[in-house]
Image 1: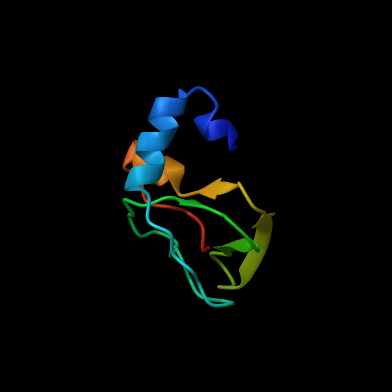
Image 2: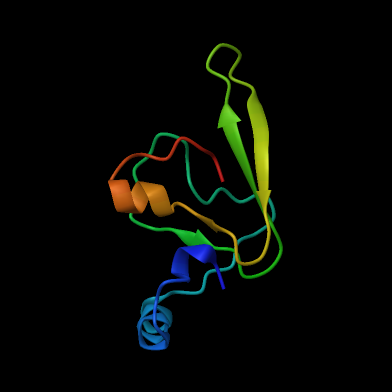
Amino acid sequence: KSNLFSELTEEELAELARNATMREYEPNELVFRQGETSDDFCCVASGEAVITIKHEATGEEIEVARLQPFDVVGELGLLLDDPTKLFV
């Protein structure tokens, strides 16, 4: 259980699960693009997701994190209606 959901009741968790969509991604498939607004967030169910940022001067993608099962990404863009700053 992610800390993001730790304050939810069992009923609220059940409602969230009913409205969730399970998606599978291919290795190296882009989930979120840096700078684009998204109304989704992802919870890693299995495997891992790599988060990178693009260095403004060089254009090089720099790995900043690896997400493991139950880690979430994209929640801030959803909650704050602010474009994501990362590539996932």
